[in-house]
Length: 408
Image 1: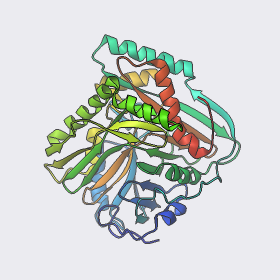
Image 2 (image 1 turned 60 degrees about the vertical axis):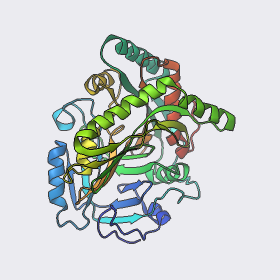
Image 3 (image 1 turned 90 degrees about the vertical axis):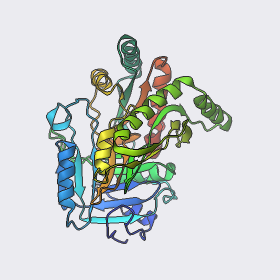
Image 4 (image 1 turned 45 degrees about the vertical axis):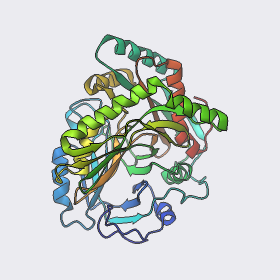
């Protein structure tokens, strides 16, 4: 492979082969494939974690000066505490690595011609958190809260814990996710050791359809997704599901909340913003979505991709709106910590350019266990049974990559 000479951005060396890059991934590496490029980072010359994003951005800028590879790769958590991370009660904190080795290539989607089977042992135990009836009850409580205050939307997630009697290889999951998902953002990132001292490595592996933000010079892009419907192997049912989503007033209203919030966060930072008049229909291997491609031009070249990510995160697509009330209700109704689910995975270079994907359709991979995550937006008019079905459909992205057929 060819080592990238100037970071992962527009000036990166693109001569590495995507299939070779994917095959080279091993647990502990950072991997991200987008519509524009794929990157693989290995080792750590410098690790920065925890604390306020503004301070982290300043520390990263200083650390990148004169670094062997002027790019930092990292992950942002989802915090249910407005104070966040170390200042709050959550265990998860932001983590950035200045890698010892860095390679770049064309997008890896389609590079995995054959399905990988190694590293996916037979499950020993499968535990939904909460049980399906518990999620229905949480949705009903959320609907009650929506009718009582100024809350307009809240996103509620489920987790699925799967234990194994043999080790799980995240490289196998990554390979199959790249094969199954021909667009979007496929990623694997090593997570910091949890505060409770749990042993062993942890990786976050997933295939997200959603761009949080991209910066290239003064050009900024975001592509929020909200409003969903399941795909079907039956072409007629699949088409009807897509048409129903495009015609759904409820889903369009939910999508508008997300788009408005993203535009409101970017407007003070941009001299120009372009927003399409209506969302477009987007697809993954398991879901239809409504998406809006937003572009703009920054007022200040000094605003890095990381600062932009912090300004947008968490969007109503993964939290709700207004953010403080939605975040509080998430912490009250979800019986688990999100940690890095619904956070962000990406990179930033010494020029401030970078790309951040929303960390959804993912699993936290330990040595002999996985925790899968799946969520959906609750608005006035949501149906608890339909919301449960939506989370079940979204679980399929990871379950298919594992070769598992589970009815949830």
